[in-house]
Image (cartoon, rainbow, N blue to C red):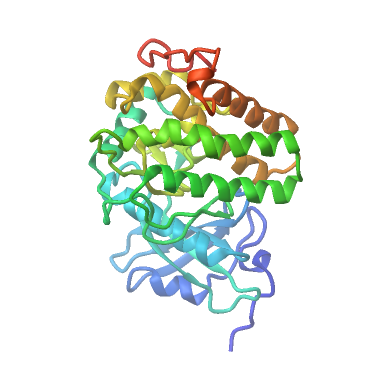
Length: 355
């Protein structure tokens, strides 16, 4: 009887280490495959990763990428498999092909895995023209299976479980998502009265003014499949084709502009060229004059996720507060009594102009 591994490091050792592949992973490889090599490969903040080399039944060699996690691993791995699978259906050359997720047979603590094709890639910023065209295709061609906002299974942004139950209202869906991340962030980084008061105004005053109009007056807001965590660490260039690829998805069906929220963060390399190219493929939702403010609102969720994953970054918390204050000034509780007029933003000229 095989021994039970006692830690995730024994399942997949440090970078460069070889290891014996768990029987549960072998079981999902193509029939007749022979495992030639398994070694730890790459780095990940919340998981362990490895490259597997196998010989298929026809004698050809094939490589797979393996990711595994212990605490919360089932939700993370099932969520990532389904996220990548939905994206792969729409853009198979843009996403490594997902194969399976499951649970190791001999690991303690309990360990879950996700298996997909291995792609030799270079971590370079993708060309904005090509990348944004491919991303826009996914947004345009995707169809929510329920016609609502949400996802088919629970999944995670990093290691944080997302509130992604189906909801016909984008305002309702996004509010629940944002509130859950804010509450988690407060629990980790501590109370800050000014910050918490500002957030109450965002939820009670700003979100209704920015998101309700998207589905008011006969407007229909299509739920689009989004990657959900699209920054430079989750994109690369496929060395065999020269084309961009994306991975580590936290997908759900959302307002397509939500995808751009993370690009607005100060530390992210995606920026003005990518906004401009994206808008050449998909015009802003109506009311178009609120496009820039909606993207600023969506960026709050991604900055909160950063504060949860990497606590103790006061400059990021200050960025969140500054963005909230900007939106509160522009969308006060009683707009008619505001002495500060709202400034219209022309996204076709400079979508980052008010950053």
